[in-house]
Amino acid sequence: MRHPLKVWRDPSDHISALRIVTLMCLFAPLSKATYDSDAIRVDARPITELIHRTGDWALIFLLVALAVRPLSRILRFNRLLDVRRMIGVGAFAYAAAHFTLYIVDLMFDWREIASEIVHRNRLTLGFVAFLSLTALAATSTNGMVRRLGIKRWQRLHQAIYLIGLLVLIHYFLRFKLIESTPIFATGLFGWLIGYRLLVWWRKTGNELPTWMLLALSGVIAALTFIAEAIALGIQANVSPLRVLQSAFDFDFDMIRPGWLVLGAGLIVVVLDFMCARFAKQRRVARRVEHLAA
Image 1 (cartoon, one colour):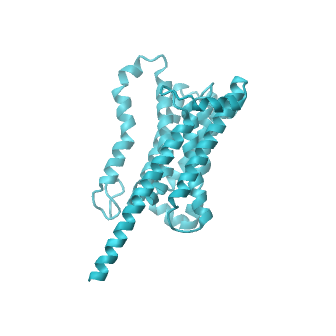
Image 2: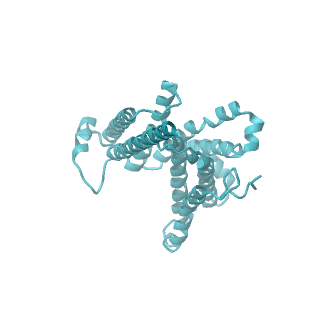
Image 3: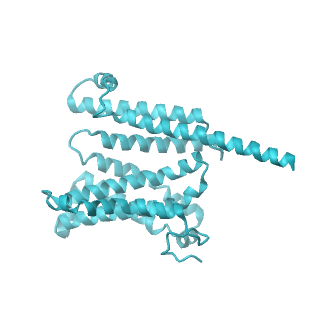
């Protein structure tokens, strides 16, 4: 049996290049923070900077963990599922660092920490998401899967979708003004949820057709544009239609999140098209070899 601490080895106890690359990616933000340590140290509020960095990476890795299942199907590469748990635990580790740094920033004043969590909506949502993510991380081992049973374990871990929503709201409320980054993250989250809803609706184990992925990308991008227009319209007290019209005023210094979501979706569509053709060619080649034999 593979030792549980040897995370660079796959379930068959072989060294996994995929796991090693994943570990490097998980430690990359920590390496970047170490490299930027001098700049962080002279910042007006260095701990706040680290709080924001760890929170950003917790959200990023949470979205990546949600993207593993769709990508494994689209790329026809099921071995990608082997690192999903590792990425999810990585998201929890950065969320734990995010919360720990917040405690340090308040000088371990537990009364003030409790008061902030109770009375500030953003912190309440973040704390609930963190507790939920802690529960998922604690039950992520094979032993816990056996104890809970696969069905109960799956139902528990479906809470990741609600956790993702809470984290996004927590992230949105960090900004006083409407920013493009949280809108882009929400668009990606919407695409990932939309993909799962389509798979559930079709009730087949097959990959979604390319045209359906294209339609999904277009719909989610359109919803991203509409959501941004409504939010900016309310903030600036202008008509959302005027904001929508400005979406076609291209400025490479600030690309609108709707276009970024559409671009990400189109990349997935191209990957699916290429992988589908490659898989079809392999099936034809195997059939020819079988007939020749």
